[in-house]
Amino acid sequence: MGINRQGFKYLPKVYKSPSLIVPCFQVKGTYTMSEVVLIRSLAFEKMKDAGIKAICFDKDNVLTAPYVSELYPSLKNAWEECQQVFKDKIAILSNSAGSMDDIGYKAASAAERSLKVPVIRHRLKKPDNGILIIRHFQVPPQKIVVVGDRLFTDILMGNMDEMLTIHTQPLTAKGEELSIRYMRKFENTLLQYITTKYPPSQAPPHPFYRPSFIRTPMNV
Ligand SMILES: [Mg+2]
Image (cartoon, rainbow, N blue to C red; front, side, top):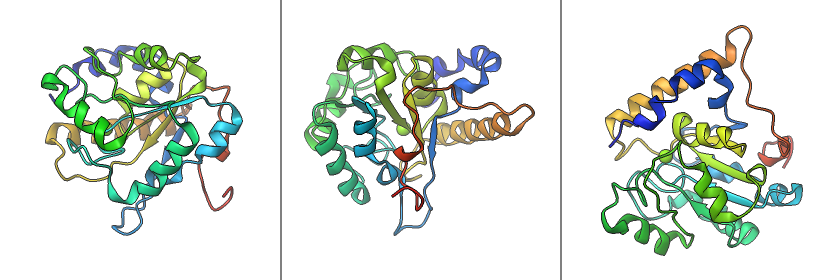
């Protein structure tokens, strides 16, 4: 379950175009218990004002702890704000809830009840199913933001399908499979390498990229 073969199949493609796994934005947590930043750093209102129409989140370690249905407590305000701004144009695409591993879609239904947004059902795992997000929202991919904590699933999918990609730090190591932890380490090391080696790769250029989408002391 943990090792994502769909992601591995894209290694040759990423080797040719390394920018495919470079997120348009990276949101760093501070790694202290009291001050986890993550989706709280996203300026949802600014995105909407700039023309972004919809936002799709990964679930595990972005909105909830891994394999948990309830929102991570410190994200309550950010999640409410997101819902106020994007209303019915929010969805979740997860490689656990709503996937073929989710028997009877029990985890998807539980997450929908708890988070109050649709969880897209799918048979192929990310990064192969960006088209499902586009179909779900019925808006051009350039006007969709994808938020996820994994480079070879969330970010690769978003970049391949021309969505705006935001990479968040994982919420917690608790409950996360060991294989996922190793993959994350591999992905982050690779990202570090390809964004610093000569010539460094940058995220694919995106028409809706605005620095103001991330709250920093500079652009609050
Ligand atoms: Mg995740």
